[in-house]
Image 1: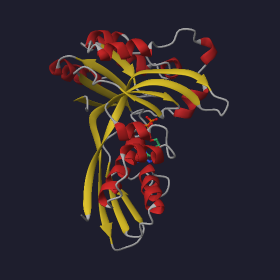
Image 2: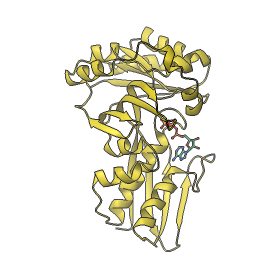
Image 3: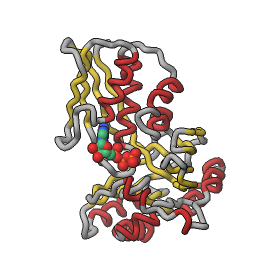
Image 4: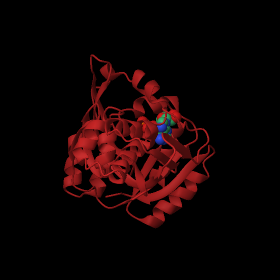
Length: 287
Ligand code: ATP
């Protein structure tokens, strides 16, 4: 095999709590991760020219060591002494810096594809052990599906599939830096936290309506005051049939959960007409 391709799914957080700040500066989290059917695509081709050659459809993305795809390819190729050249094309569809783990899922999928292309025979667990060196969300992006993520994001417990539903994604054009969000999070002010255990029960009971009532993200306490547009998008979705609506990760992406595709599509058109520009998209869960 000289060439292979792989789809890298985005994720949303059905719940996100921050437990504490550790002495090393990292935040301990408790999150429900869910893959959705919105994909980047990576195509990997062996080449006679030594080295990693990365291209992408987005001209503002780095194609050197600053790209997580490059880093993940280099990590495996160095460890296994792979001296062949490798051309990687990254076709990005997941919005960048959106709270949907775009870079992490690209890195995870790149490792899976290299494992296959060069016959490394690494188990998923072994890939996860290597992936976490590049980013705490990469092990989850290798696992995919519905999962509880704890620690700094690297402690994973697979969960049963979340209930079937339709997901409306709205990503406003502005960016929010993850660093800004965590450094402005005032944990001592929050005595009430998202109930992630209740969310897990709803998933286990396959109860979509109750799951949507329990969706909470502690990071909204930072991002909504800084960007009230996030609250407006959430309200818009709820007023147009969403059973629940939440910001994903550290934002600014907002998603709405619907039990009906037509309602989700109608709400999408309303979000499209909001006064600030949004990337809008209807999809469903990736199992
Ligand atoms: P998370 O949900 O894990 O916080 P995110 O969706 O907010 O991630 P990314 O899309 O992963 O953020 O991008 C964050 C930064 O990482 C960007 O500014 C970008 O320059 C850099 N980056 C490196 N590699 C990639 C990649 N393959 N895709 C997207 N961004 C990348």
